[in-house]
Length: 161
Image 1: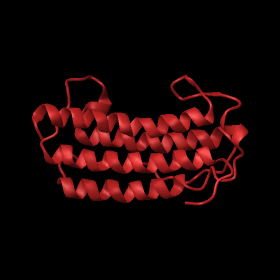
Image 2: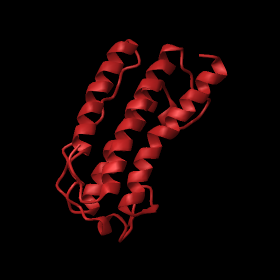
Image 3: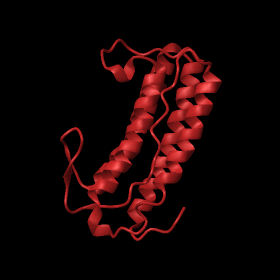
Image 4: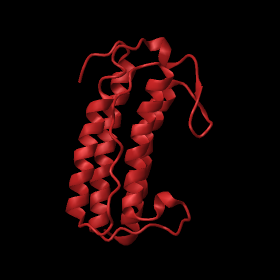
């Protein structure tokens, strides 16, 4: 991982990477175990593939938002793949894993030359109209896959998977 002017950014990028990988592995185990979602009208819970897309695409959106707020160049993260529920688990996993590696590679560079102060001042409205400073958006990006992994682990514990 490259050196960063602000060590907190380096830590958040590393934790984001760890949590995204852990989520994908948990998602795979959950689907292999017959993963089911609770009844919910939220389209992000329409299928296992929809949930995976939600988590992956959010990570792309968070870095795009951060770069926009800091007037950094576009990190050129390709859109997350829309996975087909009719494909087998291995095909979907491989496609998601390949894209995730692309995402994580693109996450490593944009923030390395940003000074610490820019991570805290000012704050900006997110796409969902909540104010975030850059550091808090990075924390959000770390916690988002962790929260969904926790959710999938709870579903697996209920089913005894």
